[in-house]
Length: 203
Image (cartoon, rainbow, N blue to C red; front, top):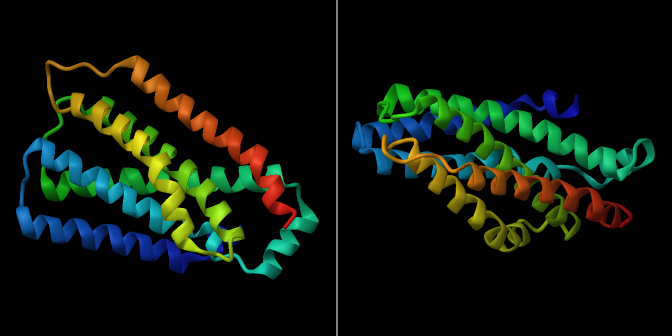
């Protein structure tokens, strides 16, 4: 409920998405499929940083103490993961809609790409929520989140790009093994958050 009440943050994300895609539209009109795909995931990455990563960094020490008194650390971090996942899924679909409207639709397998967008948005939200929880306890140093996030987010971005390239080529197929590997990474992030966050919570 507290997250939902902070509407200025939500509208700021909407403005960021709309303005960025509009600038791309004015700069290149209708890009080719590979450029379209690359730009889409770059925008998704920055949208996730703006939408999700601030969820812990904006919490004051007094509010965290209040949360500490009313709930367990596992419930708290799972609630954060759930809310940020839902937020990122909505932002991902909105980004895809605006990309299609302004920059054309080069997708050969639109249904499969929408599924990848949802899976990718979920994956990015989990990673950055977990990293934001760590950074918030390190004197709210956002630089730590960037340093820790680089080796974690790169494998996910590589897998997402590999999967999404198949949605733009009629002869390529999306590998179920790669999808399962991406889901396994997401489950690992959730488990790490549940296991490690209680130690941060005590500080």
